[in-house]
Image (tube, rainbow, N blue to C red; front, top):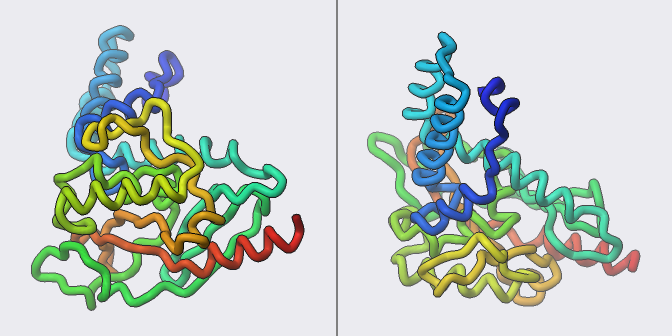
Length: 256
């Protein structure tokens, strides 16, 4: 993979934009994005006359690694979000993350500062847990994948992925209502990453912590339901706590 990418880098935003049009929201579902990425790798292998001994293993991995593109997209999202950091007075959200105990956010005007709150019990979240597991078997799937919702993707772009309705807010119609509501807490719409079900509107782009606090509307998250013992047991729909956004805005206002 490294040899291929050094010879011919793969632009990720066009893949992400096309995948949104094909039913992905780029967190809970990256089926289309994974296929598009694999095709891009294949095109480069043909161009490079790729016959390295590792090539079959690479293609087999891309065939079976359902969430590979999520990790690629997370890296891209982190690069994009970091470009919005350190703008004096800005309340744009530049990161959301969580571990097994806490959820935390950062905003542009307070670089490097995390604002935290305890996580609620996982048993109360909607979603789908595969038999034979129950919510008691789950641990939080903490980490950085919430960077996708930071950009307005994932749960925030639920309208793009009606196939996820059983593990999201509800019906496809409710998913459209959810995404539509989030434009009120976003600074803009993305010019190329668009959602066909919403008439081609761009995803809600640049989440504004001040608007989130004013409207008490936190961007939701599509996240995997991870077993305490390891592995994936399904997916859940998670609404982060509001308090870290309140704390961030109060701190920001105190120094402006």
